[in-house]
Length: 602
Image (cartoon, rainbow, N blue to C red; front, top):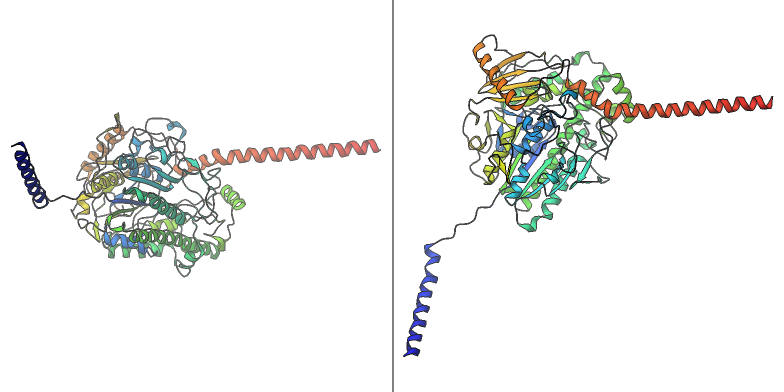
């Protein structure tokens, strides 16, 4: 009996097991686990609003333009007027006075140093996008300019990046490991927090892309998605490019900056980037091209040719990265973000005799050498007005030319993003982080991170705009801004703005950006109620963010010169004085000895 019962049980068990094995394959299909997208951030340095072909430029940027065709262009996107505050907001989604960059080390007045929000480095009360994505299982890499802190606890390797080859300064030479002479004593490059040496064949754009490719491939076996933050030095001062890229523009720019500004405005309108026929201003700081002599024109033409070459060289490297990701099968599942950190750089380094003499001792300033190894050049306010076209103003200021820059977001394999679209709704650099975390399916934070209180993200996701929704994700909410005394308050289509010298006169003005993005007609006298309401909004923003008033007579330009003199000029003068003093002492001693010998011989 026990044997027969055991056999029956075994048969029943086998039959039931067979039924169970057959049913689930049909009744319970397996849902595939979604794969997180890779993320590539392409951050250009000092590119003006119309420096990209798909925004109206004559500069050849075919690879950036290809991303624009697969994604969305944002024609009303704003950053800060200088690099570090923009970079900190991009990294954290938090406004600059709350992330520590109420001002930069190069432009902060002494009275503000150490005050809340004026750390001049990205503080530890914020969480970076690298920290968020790393916690979600991403590999995180950064190459190129950082400029958010140079001590061990503030370099990118300590702020969430697995691997990073970064420059701690505002800029450096593009052909060799050399600082901007007069600003820094050395080019502070580090890899993973340790001092690093650049290769002999270094060129900045090629190097930061190649090092990123190396990082991506070195971690491929992990199977994890990656964040690749590539921070170009192009087109920051000094403007430098390979000879072949400069030669590409050898027949261009002979009509001058005013003609180029007008041509770009027409192309931008034809592309749908700005309204057709919008009024534009001639900036008071723009020199009259017709009054330049032959040598001045030749140098000006050459520097803009080098500027175009520098941009094209950067674009080519972006194309090389894209081609690599296509070859490895990563391209379709990669989100690309291209933007500039602020508007075009108007500074003329040769504006003072002291600078001309100093730079002439450090660099080969011959016109034929502009843009090449060993050169030092900048486009100045004339060409910067064309780079910002058709907007008013440029870098450092709170004008649209200082704050409004190109933004492209593309995800080639994602059907929801409207390919080739243009969004004209107000967007802000703090919106990038929440946009990327939403697209990646990665949770952000609500003011608490790993058991500690942190600054909450203030940006808003641009995903609705990417899908084609009209208007701004900010609606009618006020959005404030201040840096170095230049300030703005955005609300809906309107902008309240104040600019200090040399760009402005310190007076508040009101503009309708939808009708007048060139900021040509001040509406404050016609709309006093709106003006008063937006002034109240700005005062509330300034109070909530601890914005400090600037000292009397302050300008960012003067502060940069003072910073350079204190950091480099004064020590060099002291060293020169000691050297000259030593020579005088030696000569005096020699004269004394010769006189003594004569006296003894007599």
